[in-house]
Image (cartoon, rainbow, N blue to C red; front, side, top):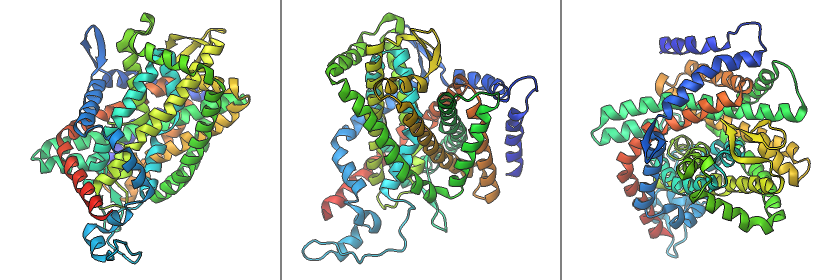
Length: 536
């Protein structure tokens, strides 16, 4: 194990060795950019369909999510009330103690006494804590910067396809998180180890596909470690650094590195405590930061309520008859789905790692909770951001749709290119003067909560690869914190290429496994529904 770790370190440490004639931030970017470009091109390999080059990963993602939605009879809609009740703890007794024990202790009137106890209860966090941790890993700068980029490059119609991706993604989250709990491993001390690594290896082994399962699990674990360094870390620290630099007018060749070091120290303090500490932090930060952002969005939406019909008109018309300059309908679909996939991570399998730590005896109960994530992240928060951007452009004519390069868009008045965070900040500030300062705080909180959640995802994958020893843990955490600094110093273009590709790459091994294991999810789901009906 030590030799494998040393080999990985030998590849990563040179990224911090630079020539001396440039600023430190620029040196970091120069070292990071070539790999980011190569990795993005590899993951987004396309096939020609109807005259368009469509990434294979998006075909797999969309086809799988659509199939699960139809097979499970639109669970995002039909089981939405059930999901709310599960989060509220309505069925807590049977989830903690099991159907037989609850029935044995029920009174003649059907009441469940408060005296049931079971010391063998598995899991580390509650449904709400698991949801908060997973949501903190998805609700982040993808909702702020990513949506702005999607609207700028794909036009208002990209919003429609982001919503569609969110709705069908609810079914994928349900499948992967049910499997995450079903095949989790619980250590002697009660620590839970779960996620795609375990349901791919164990689940496929049960299906007489042991070799395939081990290969897919290993590939996923390696990619998840990379994704934790990229989308769950570098992208977050990059956008937090950009916003702080812009708001405080900071200058200097090492500004990003300094901000990255401060963020790394703060993140390091939390991630030392493990999932329980992470969950206790995220359950407080997520409602607070989401509340601030949603409240501000609603203020702007209601201030422009007379234009709401026009905005949705642009969204629907742009979804099916976009301007040819934007790339046609296929181009808009690709932009919408790619940004939504990065934001809600449905199909990537990452959230299943957090959900697997929940306290329950019924795997499907957490699958039901998990389907709320894409709804919160994409259908609600991403749509609110999109409406604010559309209102802003209707009023100010700040940019032309489709007039952007990479992850930036050109402003009509100045001809300057700005990133997604800056564009969103301008939109909110135009209605709520000074809100950019509040948005900066929200962005830092979004970034912070996403980083600590993804540190857990990456660490679980690292443990799967290198064992559960303390030395392996320390090495991973040092590397993770190193990428906080790299992300803050590098340019957005380099970071988003690497981050996008890392998140999307997880879809390949995960979705292949889901398409084989979904019948097991159906059995778990029926078992849970039967237990509920017998008691409640």
